[in-house]
Image (tube, rainbow, N blue to C red; front, top):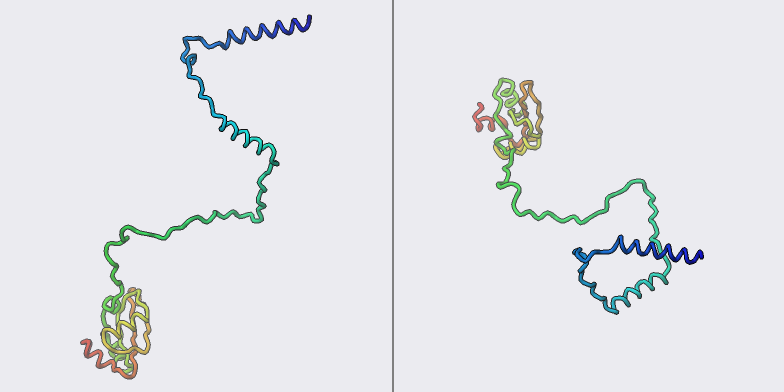
Length: 181
């Protein structure tokens, strides 16, 4: 009696499911094309793969042990620059040429005394000029060799250079050539 009751309940449930989930003929899904039958080769390949996976042992990738607390971004490809056009259209000219470095000679009494007594020429020079720059500029402009260059920055913000010439050259001759004396 209990088996009959269970069978009756099962059949009633089945009938209810058919009524509830039945697709009507007017529905657009009712007339779907049948799925294409897959070839036996495809099924055989799938089955082979599954069999291989089942037979093989489950392997987990070993986790790399991190020994350092800092993370460094992996090095990726760095390509060399290959510009299609120059960054600047014209070449930059030299900012410190000999005429820019030596601005003018100083013609005060104390400067004249230095020319006559200690073979030294006095110039006002560019504020950014170094002693080496001044030495080279004097050599290029006046064809004399400087033994030593002393510089100072005056309170008005201009740089003054004392160019001590070697014994081969006379400061008085150079001053005459320049037109100081």
